[in-house]
Image: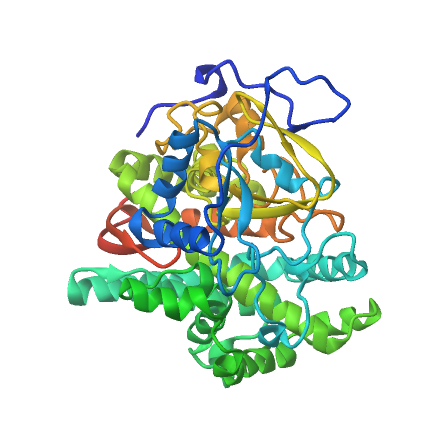
Length: 496
């Protein structure tokens, strides 16, 4: 297991203050510089950046090369998709952990219609409604719709632990069977089925397998999400064919209309309690249902299908010593709590909690954040202060923010116990996957993920249930359109 990386072993030049900006009335301590970078020739520059981003360089190298070229982590560039989907691809990129958090401050940045970045998917894909994710907190419906999601989470809390155990016990059986038959098992398909079934059963007390959806839920959800995120996806098709198909023109929504209707009908029939609450709040059942489909199939299912393989990758690659340490901690705590797993029991598992936080840090499931400057701003990086004009689009690439070497020692390494102890927990404010610091909690007045605590909980549950069953395992890791593709090549059943 990797050695501890607590705050005491980190660099001492990190400022404790959480603010990423300075007031226009304050005197900057750092030099004031103009933002470097350029957008290239109209139309051509955006396409060149798009091809570099997706194909010629790849995402990380695209940003690294610009940081190196301009010697700055705050710079100007174009972000995909560009022509003809995005009317304006120009952004100011924030590529460090100090400048990035301004994107959470809704007093300084506007979030209206920026959920997917420099373009917005057609509302034909969401019943004609602008879904909560696209609303700025200043809009009247934002508070009501976010409060509805809080109600959903509260009303389902007693089902989360038992339904998770039931669905993921079935997943583990599937993995074991395929390993025995084929010698290895792709985690993707059975994991997605388990995730979809769990979310439906936990949120709405309804098993999709027993409905007209059957086992088609993940496939329908994935197809619908592709029609929204296609402009910023790659699927591994030949370069110019894929660029024309996905990144140049929106995929027509009518091609997924029937699939979406199947999802909508299932949720409309299953979510009666939540839809009743929506009506009491002044939200129509139709609009509420479209938001529930989005929150479940895009936000929750999308997040789990991306993040669970990420955790499995990093834990798997960390090796047997970590696996045995997790197994011992998890099993001993459960034993000392009468053999039962509870929320309070999981709080007694510091290594398990740290491993989950470290996975969020090193490989955040939400990589992009956008915001439009509401006024002229001064933004600090570690080395300079930059002026942004009102109306400019700000873009943050979260993996560079949470792997900032000015904040974390061994920032590119997976350090399992990084967040253990009092000092380690102080660094949780730099874990930002939820559109806000891990130390804060979502409210109706911000854009932090409504399900932040839920996602953290189910991620912990996955690690706990996995190591209740297994001592150690091995994986192979490959690329995927989003996240990573994990294949399990061996599992050793629990022996103690």
